[in-house]
Amino acid sequence: MKSKKIKDLVIAIKGAGEMATGTACRLFNANFKYIFMMEIQNPVAVRRNVSFCETAYDGTTCVEGITAIKTSDTAEIQSAWNRHQIPVVVDPDWHTIKALRPHVVIDAIIAKKNLGTHRSEAPLVIGLGPGFEAGLDVHMAIETNRGHNLGRILTNGCPEPNTGIPGNIAGYTSERVLRAPCSGIFTSSLTIGTLVKKNDVIGQVDTQPVISRIDGVLRGLIRNHTQVTDQLKIGDIDPRGNIDYCSTVSEKSRAIGGSVLEAILSEYNR
Image (cartoon, rainbow, N blue to C red):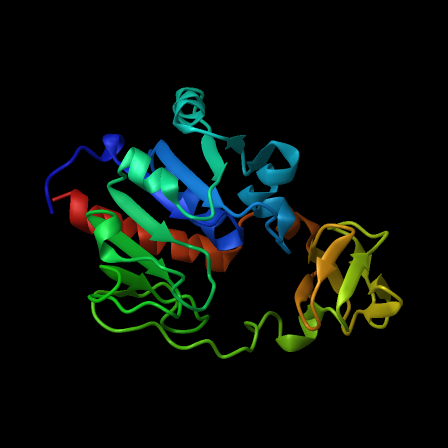
């Protein structure tokens, strides 16, 4: 890989959800300042307090002291960089990659499949989680499944396939996830950070209630009045009950971001 000053690297991140945001924060704190993120028009995030995709609705979002701002073109992206902010552009087709020619592309959509990322997009292309094959469609892939191999960097082969089972937190897996009981419009009077009890009604999809199965803190919840499909993940209850966890990057996201940082340094800091 051609030598390049670390501080000058331009890094594109596909997606601006929780894992993408944790990765962006880790890189930004490591003094990578030329980061831009690409999102769809109406993203749906559960852990909205730690997801830069919320800029699509609010214009700006701050996570752990790092500010992201919605941008619409390369000039606005440059202005955001000048203000030490992370620009987020609504660009579902990733046209900004062709315009800015980044040194690194990170697919952090966490779609559990490859939506079109390929190695020719940049000198270093990294895919997070299942759906990528290192050495084929990306240069490196990062393991995102909780457990012994979380954050492992793969230069050949694929991350573990999607299990469909949420990670274990304080002994709970699927019980801590709130899912839509049917298709319809989700509404709730609760906010992220609310302490809830087992069997509490968190909200409803049309007339069907969404009920908590455990005690804990409402760590994530999708936006009110969002159109949802049956069984879509719409909330997350943390049984540890620590409200501070609602507004900080998770240990999983931080670990994955650290692996992306390692991957970039292994190629460009020679």
